[in-house]
Image (cartoon, rainbow, N blue to C red; front, side, top):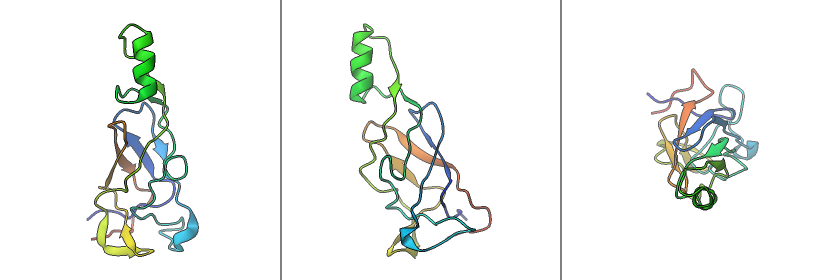
Length: 129
């Protein structure tokens, strides 16, 4: 059974070079083992999802421009997450602030093609169906 994700969870992007941590604001008023619990709407770039160091996605306009300037040699550029859609799938049987709870098998898709996954949910005892 998947674990509930809470503030401080470690995230990894398929095009990022470093892990990042999830920031969950206490607006949902639900705590999980201490820190605030996340739901699928905790996907806002630079609010909930922090940068992953450098981005190597050729679909990212800054990477594409730097790569073109380097005569076609892939040139990573600083990551700025572009997550316009919520996490999928979440746990539809558990609602936090009337939205599905975020579990550790959910994924978030970056507009530049990266898949953001949860490496460590920051909870060890709270499981959700």
